[in-house]
Image (cartoon, rainbow, N blue to C red; front, top):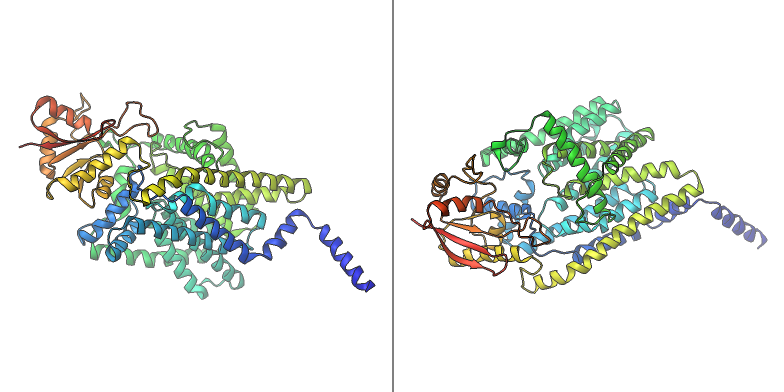
Length: 560
């Protein structure tokens, strides 16, 4: 009995001598399944609390929906080239199998989001310290913006799903190479890496950097043969993919189709010319400020989502920490983290080069933040782990960030839940501001009331398509046939252009420039086309429908 008591005392004493980090490591190792199910449950909970049954005013999700529908109904004469085509192809497959069902498409994205949590968890579990691992998974499973995109037909949920599988597969390949450095013996894993690289690069254009990132990574760690294998593996699938696209659709690839727009000074106005070197440098600086000093902190819940202020010092601080983090993981031989740091940095840099600062969408940096946070947390852990006070500082810092993330999601849920309840009960317009409600109702009116062979010009044609029950609308993204003196359309040229394209009607909305306030300032692209026509030919445009009393939308018929 005495011996037993002595052993118990010794064990207890040993346990009490463990540091806070050591206790967390032991607890995490003993609760793998509980942690996994907890994070999956949290992700599912917030996915439905933040569920959005509508389409976004940002337009891209409607663009993808229209593209998927056209794949089915215009096959093989249509191939999506506005940006990366894979997710749109997937929507086309769903449309072919189930019909055009918006709610079903959204539920598929919720599933992709859930699996991204699962594979991120499986990839990181026991590979990085639990005090780093847990807050990263908290972000992935609870962040309000990730959960917003989980129920939207944007590419983000699908892309994060692919990234998580790639992360998991790369860790497995790394393990295999540690045991046997002969890369050819692991050809199955290499083929999977190559296949996933293709999927990533055809889901988001910036994802193409996955291939040079693999090459750079293997060259840095002096595994030149494995770098070549990664390139060959990708090339096998890439060449097969390009061959199939040309055989079936005979289409351009995503990059040649987008290239002209991406290098323009204004993506909506080719007449302003292309960016020069100084312009691209300015674009990168502007995007760094937007995404590192504003969007990064908004996503973490530390800045108001409507704030427009940028702070150069915050930008420098975040970039400095990221560079230090890359050096830290390299110094501590965290090879998989080093690769994903290179890939993330390259993806951000390419995005900042090719995207005009005016687009300023938080999802550009959001998809990179799981790896960014992993690097930052690991660096902070490395510097503070050796002292008890340092460990307390680390835990306090992480708790503040996690609480901010969860609090932001709870606050957003309180706003979203009443809206989605109304939407699911049949009110498809509830939650939109009056300008958008009138615009979308007018799109539906066009589908219900105009002849089937009519073609309506719309500033947001894909959104009109979704709410117009699949009716085709003619897109107008910039002032057509612009007169250099008036900056409005030349009326005769505009009318000739509409006649050439078969446009029979024009929809003029009152869409706000400031989406949150009715300041009287509206997106006037279509107005600058219509006004010169009305001035020169007063009887050429006939008003046939008005939707809404405040912030109305009008339908004009082009008369013969």
